[in-house]
Length: 297
Image (cartoon, rainbow, N blue to C red):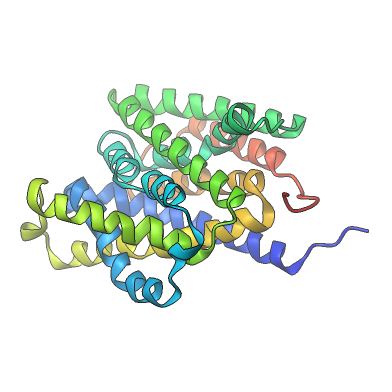
């Protein structure tokens, strides 16, 4: 007898909510460069504003009690400035749609590679087939975008892939270590704010003084609260309840939604080749998603 536990239902709901939230985040991050903010400013908003909300909660729940120093260091590094600065830098070179393609679109493939190489986790035939379809579509989309829009887009694409590797490690470890919501927030927000904000304030270039209030508020809300609070909480819940493979596959739907939003809102190219590649990517995602039979041990 097979039934779907309520926790799995909420896990799928959390993953699909993030698909739409992150699709808009791609657009907001792409237009950040036009506001006058530097990528270092965006990282400061990400860690600084989220920590204002997170600090009282962490002081109350004391989530560090359930973590070793090594675990705190690893999770904080994975979700730290190196990861997010690579992502923000990618938007300086590549279209917004490429952020979804090369961060979220390749997650199933990256997850398979890391699972096999680090944890000896054998992928299923469906996962392999889906990952291959996703990879083919990503290559086609990258080639089409580079050849028709921006010869430097490949630089952004590589930076996005680096971000995908970081995030895949986070998804895998959050499931294997069964990290709680407050533990994720503590490592991803509080620790990184304590490390990064002093360095940014003293050494890194900033454009805060010249940014109009409207664009600043948009970036503050979306960079400061959406990814580090809502995003981390929802992804942690999804990875624990429906598994790493399903979570990664669902999140990889972001490229299709992001491509459409990029075309509609930013006027980015979405020609016949791009549309066909996005359809192939969607098929690959549907093939990759599998029903989770039992929780990991």
